[in-house]
Length: 349
Length: 181
Image (tube, rainbow over all chains, first blue to last red; front, side):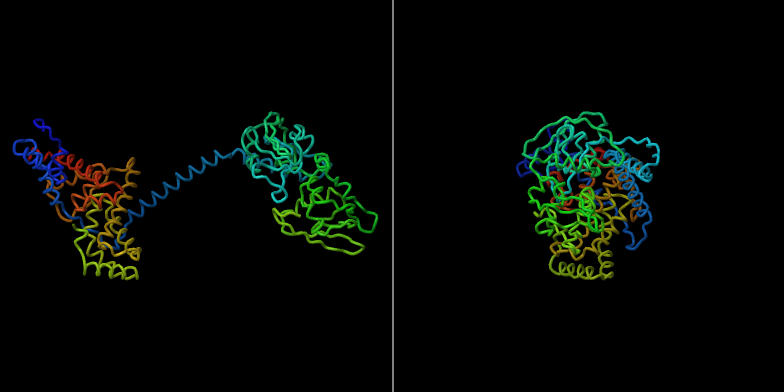
């Protein structure tokens, strides 16, 4: 094709009738004078003849068994399964395999230590690296929740957050600029740091302000496996009252009473829901008013748990709070009364 | 054109056959297979080589299972061929995946002995890149118009034409046809 400007593409387009009428007429005029184009067109025609002579292939019988196909499919399936399994393992590694190992080890260590009775010498703490501790209790969703962070239901005044001036009712928004909208997110975040590290956390105060506070992380203690799994210790309950100015003091509402034949917790005051909610973020607001608890009642049991003092009542209420309904047994004017407290997530008392 | 030349009675026959297949009539499947399996198998053979038997079998089984989806707008044969080509293209993708540790596409077994020239052409077609071979087989060998080829492969009509020209140029060069003329 060196003698003319035609390309192989031109020749094929002419041969397969893809040229416009004008192009075709021009090419047809050019063709007799150009030996290379003529040869190329003939080659295309020869290709067509060869293609027309291609043989047929014999189709298999319809129900013919196909062992090879089965084998190959098994191979493909096995390969895909292997690749997926490998991917899952890598993903699992990425998502914090180490973190889960630590949690398991910490739980096992706790279980071993808790099996020993108080006063007995406790076994040596296994060599487990525990994630650091913030020292607060997260609110259950239906009591108080916040879509942007974790509602602090209670906190240890001497814990990392407490020392930094965070109080119950604040919302923990992020840790070192990473949002913590769920307990697991916060837990994952904490595993990135070690006790002694100073981290910046952002909290939203009850008046809506957002503050950044520097928090020095503490080591986790036995029994505090999870950052919000802190026991309701007397110091903690006391801190609830300190942290909500203007709120009713629970020690004025409930006092232990063992003067009669049955010991229990006497209700001395009927606080308003507002006063209670500012005091402690628990099912307490649901007990009064529609709940039926009155001044003078002697609380004996919550569900099946005996109640003798305030420290019995609050944890017992925490344990039943995710139920649709729970019973409180009270002694009212010498008669047993069962109050069924029904409350639902998001309902106002 | 092959796909549109059947009409009238043939279309009614196709619809009846598809209905019988949809109703689970195995003899209807046998009838369809006897009529069109050769052609379906030929297309598949040149696209996927030795896996053509599987593709042909699977295409008819799929057609049998999905016969209720046949709309009756085009010939039943073309509908089954489309299923076969879709399966062939999937099979081709799988072959590409395994090409790293498998030998090249093996030749299928033809119905009759081939001349040296034809065998040479078969080899040359088999050695074309997948994208060019598929278009060449569908259009030049099996006679599908470019628009249908384009629809099956999800490409434009002009892309189909361009691939065909490249395939023809490669074949003419490999077979040294210009020196023979």
